[in-house]
Length: 126
Image 1 (cartoon, rainbow, N blue to C red):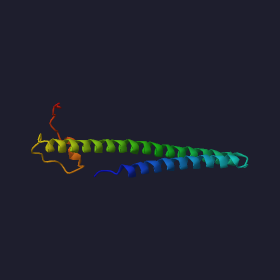
Image 2 (tube, helix red, strand yellow; image 1 turned 90 degrees about the horizontal axis):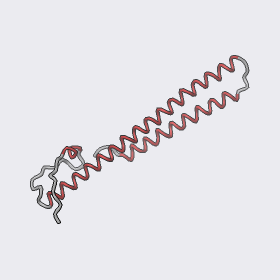
Image 3 (cartoon, rainbow, N blue to C red; image 1 turned 90 degrees about the vertical axis):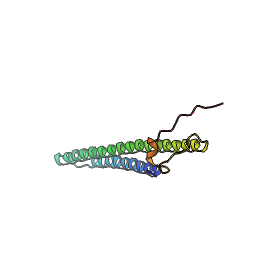
Image 4 (cartoon, one colour; image 1 turned 60 degrees about the vertical axis):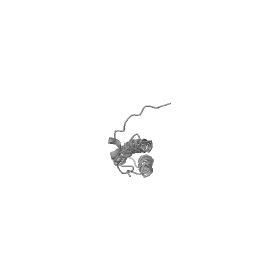
């Protein structure tokens, strides 16, 4: 069996949470730096450096979001492929059971080789 999509979704959620935490930390750092009453060039320089570092933290938070989005897209693709494999297995079983496909050597259950299996089209009778 291939990737556990529930686990993958949990990882994506964790990435989003970490991104939100990093973004909140950046906001907190800037807020605290702005609240410092240190006057003069040194104080201004410190606040500017904090704003620059906070911008980098926000970029890291954004990368976490992008990674979470990518992981969710991949997870959906895995789910779609697993559904396609299951449908091919069901169809092959039905064709074998009704005698339409008398000799069929199937891939292992759930294996990706099911994606390459070509099954005959059977006209519906009725």
